[in-house]
Amino acid sequence: MENQDRLTPIFHKYLNNQCSPAEVAELFVFFRAGEDPELLRSLILEQLNKPTGHISVEEPADEMVFERVFNSISTHIELQAPDIQVIGKRLYYWIGIAASFLIVSSISLYLYYSAHQPLNNLGRNKVHQADIVPGSNRAMLTLSNGLVIALNEARNGELAKQRNGIINKTKDGEVVYRSNSNQAKAVNAEFNTITTPRGGQYTIVLPDGSKVWLNATSSLKFPVAFTGAVRNVELRGEAYFEVTKDKNKPFKLTVNGATVEVLGTHFNVMAYSEETKTRTTLLEGSVKISKGDKSGLLKPGQQADIDGQNNISINEADTEQAMAWKNGYFKFNRDNIQTIMRQLSRWYDIDVAYEGKIPDDEFVGKIRRSVNLSEVLKVLEMSNVHFKIVDKKIIVTD
Image (cartoon, rainbow, N blue to C red; front, side):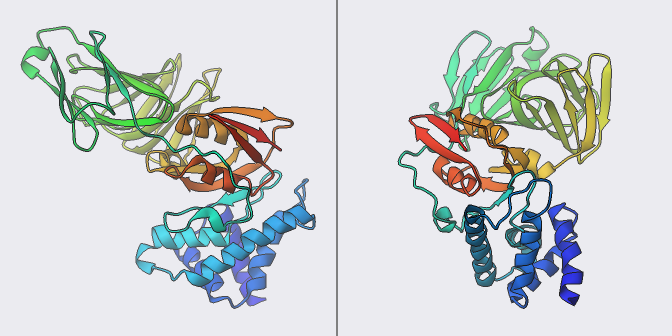
């Protein structure tokens, strides 16, 4: 009873992302010790059997899912020794497994995957006969004169010369611009565009030293040299920016008719046309968001959403989720299957179709973007969602 009184509120805090590192460590140590396995079971069951229409685990199919995940949780906790020196990563991860079932709407599945744990022991999921590999570093660079360079096929070294600078590709696969300061003041700015396809991503260093990571199906238009009083660039899709500080020359990003203005900062912008909002997440520094006659200021750890009516709302951000793609993960936070499939479509270069009723499951968790598509689908299928792969098309069924 003492353990239950102490750990139950901590467990609930964990589900709401309110645990301190010490509380996370306490949960891990207790569950790994195995002193009260029924407490872990009861805490998970409590979430599964909450009212408001949640599926009860008394139903055979849900009992099978519960047992499969619970047994996997218990095995991993028993076998994995904690590494206290990396509590922020590894210890927190294993506590995440202990808290693996968070029910939101119908049945919410905490997805977990690491480079050290293959997915083939997660359960009796059907094997997909076809498979699709993840995206990679692919992009096209379109110069102001119309010349198009396939960056993933180009050799390292100098790619092109322009009046305002030189374009190089590094051994790390990045595009780096070096402006010619002598000529930059003498000619009009020339604009180039870097574009990533579905299944592509790329990194570019702009003439001022600012670094930009482009996600799939995105493009960035920028000058070969920043010759004016403002550093202007235009984005479509999603990108993470680390902007070089220059108090005399603000950096202005135009995206979906909105403007993001900074002096020097780190931020992510998600502005896909198929999504319902444009989202800017601030990691460091400060930014001003404006569209029409509305504007807002962001502090680190905040995000601004602009909806279809140009309303700007500012809230605390899940910065890990915002940065997941750049760090090599998918991170879901109460996302429905349609939101998830749009992400998979962009990264795995696939089309998506739905048969029957669209499942209303919501998902919480994290999976590496480096795995084949079938591995992601196997984990998603631990809920009520099922898939068929037909060539480059995924059919979602309930």
